[in-house]
Image (cartoon, rainbow over all chains, first blue to last red; front, side, top):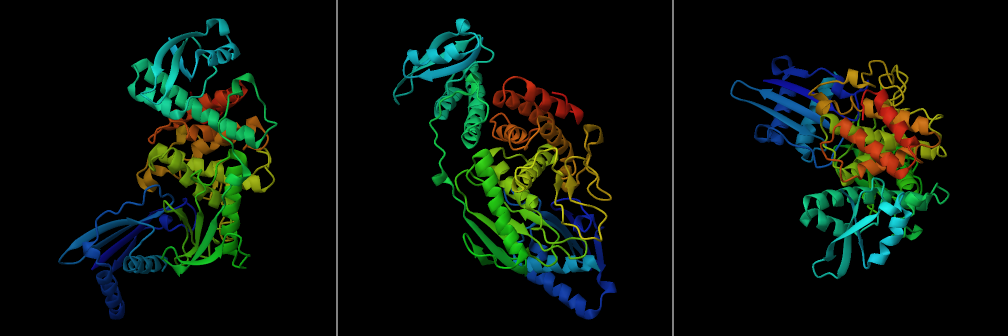
Length: 104
Length: 402
């Protein structure tokens, strides 16, 4: 399974902004089994493959992060774009995990 | 040629306005409407031949009705009058806030509005998200409550108050919706969250990562910036994309700066630093702030904000570069404020505010369209030409000719 995680937007383009980072690329071939299991759990809990492709920010919102998550397995692939605030805690947990990976 | 439309209960009410106009002998009135669809008799006149008329401020509902049902010329005149009416309401509010402000016959319009201290409604609530991505979080400080000792909570509380007080005292605006809307701030959002945002209803602040950034409540202009997004949404709905989005961002930087300067004793434009987010970065960053309005592109190493249209960035990122190209209108405001002098909330701030509330400002406004309206409103708010020239020149210096 391959995952691509990218952040853009925010209050500005500044040092430390995740929007300045290159996209995070994860290949489960490179992960220990326990982490693969955790990643699978996060994707399942978030219902990732059933999430809408694009979620628009609330009306009038500004300075939010926009996250693009792409997941590809041998069977299927799906791309999701969503913005803060993330209301679903399980989707939020997935984004938190991907953000931590982007800091490694 | 029709210039303006007047309304009154009797023709005699029109005469004083004509006499006050620059050329009363050319104040020709033609009755065009003598009834308001059963809501009472009124005489509606159109004034011929004036270029700088004194306006009889109609109730907006009258003007809107004319705008809907009048002839093309009447509709156009009503729309123009509505736009000026908004400006005059702004002007009246500003005059009420500063009684010693200059007044000329052109500003001597009647006001049915009374803005009183009793109308002031500051109602703050600060929530902690406990470093999780959940909103609203837990209430940690309410209006009138004591300081908590948590810097993020107390800074958010103070920043909301400063922003409210600025809008009330300087622009006579009662909270972000002008109707006393409660102000909610949500701090400690997420883990090492490097951002602050407005979600359409509330301000949300992260703690920063502690490596390159501090907490996002550290700078009062960031709070003024976020709350101003609500004002913009209420008034102009500037679409958050490309030039209209960059204007949206710029307006937030403008009033964020004015809030900061307000907290510094209404700091004069020439003394202000015009930095957004000063103090946000740690010592690890080679930079002083998120943005510089005075010199876009100099706030930190790698800052790519342009300060002139020749350097406009065409991009699909950042919603079409809203945080990048905002440098251009930011610079224009800085130039206008510096040239007019004194605290920017006295002239440049009200001019931009009148423009934001101008019915002619469309949600998809371009830089040129916005600039044009600032010039128009400069002359309306401050007749005589000086401020109009300054504003026009400010835009010219960033490559926008109006």
